[in-house]
Length: 384
Image 1: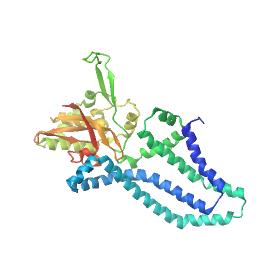
Image 2: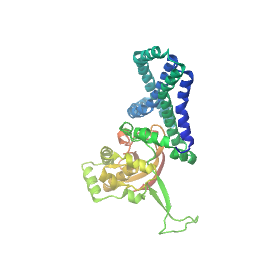
Image 3: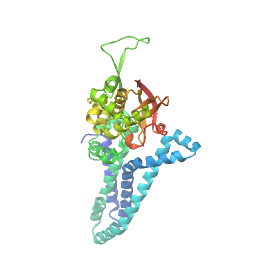
Image 4: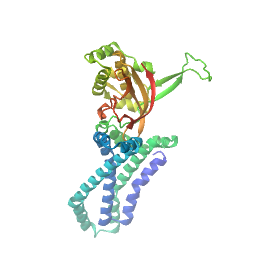
């Protein structure tokens, strides 16, 4: 096995409870304490994905609650919205954690404690070495739990700390990679988590390159550059087709104002375009060998935030609506991640409104009063 400090950490975390069990031998009291500790670790680890899943359903109730609060309270919730949702998430985690402990305690008294007493009666007259071996064997679940707990801690740490040294050790750790592939990646890519499109990694990458075919010196002697969004230019991303244009025109037939037309386009994209989780992983890992933009989203009925936003632009332009493409950050229930959305001009109201088709299935994101709660850093990169 390759020498690696992360591998060594996992080995030590696994061996520590086994060594402790061997030294102190088998004892029913120690085994009960170890069982309770293991159950607490399992309850903690399970409370995280379950709470992420439940955040989808609590979000609607929270929005309703916020709307009914006095303006002074609503002001502070909006000002400190990240802290507010983190607190809510932690409360849900605690509730799920407590419920699990109640279930485990019931199982302990009905099943596990009687089994431990029975085992103790059978081996209490065995030799000291035998009792030490049994003590070590019964500590294996605790060791496995310590390893998983450490892996999850490192996994989430890697999101907040982007140091090259840490990434090097993680990439070269055979144990961490096996746990990541077999446990954490299936969990983060499971249907359980995928029901909340916004609980994802950064799915929007901007890359600025020199234009080799048209190098022009500016006032500051900077070379002309081309900006790529998920591997394509903005003009390539919003490029439409005859099929998109004709479909969009037919879609808004019968609507006599801009708001109704924009809402119809918003609803259609939100209901018919699915979030592409394989693509988001590729973009997150800087693999831009993928097709992006309006035509891809319309043809495949899949995409990520940039594709959703480009398709909204293409459909609005086809129907005569003024539209913008906006980049910034979206709050995913745990953290702020790179994101893109739209603004559309409502002529009868003489104003621009915010629209986020990517978040469609997570609530109302068409001119929502709470849009700023989970969107920030607005940067308009195009207007048509």
